[in-house]
View (tube, rainbow, N blue to C red):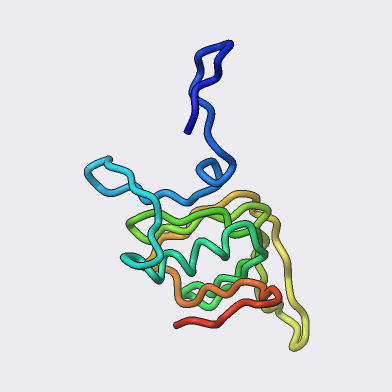
Length: 121
């Protein structure tokens, strides 16, 4: 973090700007740390990737994984619901836009893989 000499505004370094933050229930914030929060560190690599979420009622939602919060809510953009149609081999798509999925409805979250990714459970 540095201060702009002309305007006096605080300027964030690129690493600070893009670093993932954890916001706790009391409102305090911390940077995701690889040593103390290894699973969150792995999950932050999935942000801004195409994802598929399986819901508890069997529906599948595909879209861009935007973020998650301390309660486990997942935010997705450009989401589309995919549901089996009345025919045997048809799939119906419905555009939803931006959605939030509560953790009690989340069965599985999958994201696209990129070269060098390591699977984690």
